[in-house]
Amino acid sequence: MAKQFVVQLKNEPGAMATLAEALAERGVDLRAIGGGSMGDSGHVIMTTADDETTAAILDERGYTYIEGEAILAEVDDRPGGMARLARELADAGVNIYGHLFLGRWGDSATFTFVVDDAEKARPILERKGT
Image (cartoon, rainbow, N blue to C red; front, side, top):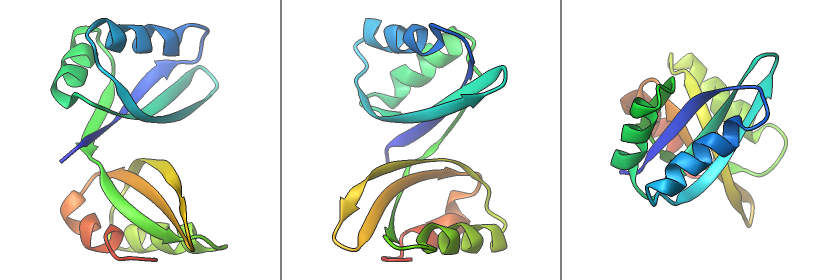
C-alpha cells in the first residue's frame, strides 16, 4: 500500500525547494503534494513513487515527519461532505494527520488520508460517498 508523508518544514524561503531537490537527486518522483504554513513552521503532505527511498532521505536529512498508509476515500461533493467524514473519524477516536485532494468525479471528491489508527479509519474512509 502506498504511503503518505506529512513532513514538517520551516516557514522560510527555500524549505520546499531543499526537500524537493533532495528527492529529485535520488530519483524520487512526487505523485501528489500539498501543504501550508503559519508562523515559523509549515508542512508538506506528499505521496511519492518510492516510499522506502523517501523515508531514507527524510531520516538522513533530519526531517520530522509522519509516515502512514494513504487510505483512499470518496466524499460527497456537497456542503457538509467533509464535515460528516471528519466527525465520524473523530467520534471513532481517529486523528487525521493529513489529507490530499485528488480530484472530483461526478458527485464525489476523492482524497487520500493519513491517520493515527488506520484499522479504525479504514471502514469509515473506504465507504463510498460519506
